[in-house]
Length: 315
Image 1 (spheres, rainbow, N blue to C red):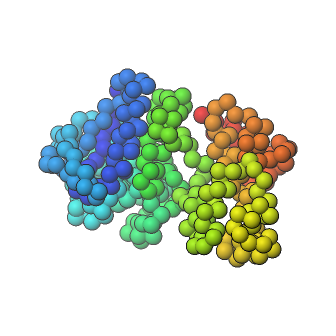
Image 2 (image 1 turned 90 degrees about the horizontal axis):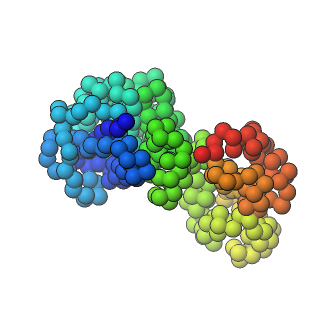
Image 3 (image 1 turned 30 degrees about the vertical axis):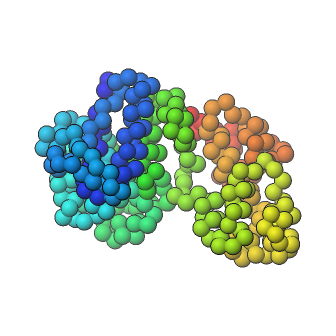
């Protein structure tokens, strides 16, 4: 069975919003020949230029589009203008019964104008969440999520989240083994830690840090198995332990120990979703000397034992 994916293009689309999902389906089709047929659709057959200057030629127009299994609308400056998005909105309304209709990033503006998201849960890029909520008050917006599905409507956060969403489609269509193969080929996670803030903790850390703390988060993430005591972290920051602890809490609103635990547990949650991992091996890999202490910390933070979480989310 070949599933036809329609990717909508328009002047001023964000390049990766379109090409990221396109590559996901293309690689999946290498694993399962004939699984997908990708078609780039536009209002006219003329060449289109992305925000980054990439020029593409659509395969066909909205008027000539064949039946589609899935529609994906990328974001970009060209879709945030109501008049410019008009042809896309008209097309979406005409294809409202398509099995899956989805947006990447600010592609939600076209879905919002179509009314197809009214009373549905949805998400978008964090920077545009307030504007989307203002323009489309009938949407139940959840601005922290990576992607959300509600019925046949799917929305995702900014840029690379389109890859997450496309991988979720592949997993639903072809199974976890194929989706994992595609994720490995693209060197991305099959599932980012679920539930998920659009900002990772290290990114939030680095965004707030403007001095000697700036490089510390990246080092911590790469060395979770090592000793991350206050003394070790203070030494790397070039501060005394008491001064470091006080500065750290002032800037980040948490003690160093609490923040280290948060990093370790978030990374453990990702690793529990990978094949050939046990609770004990994951605990050791993120720096817990005792599997029992890891289990207690994990359940305290996420509300479920790590074994139960692994059973739910492992690919």
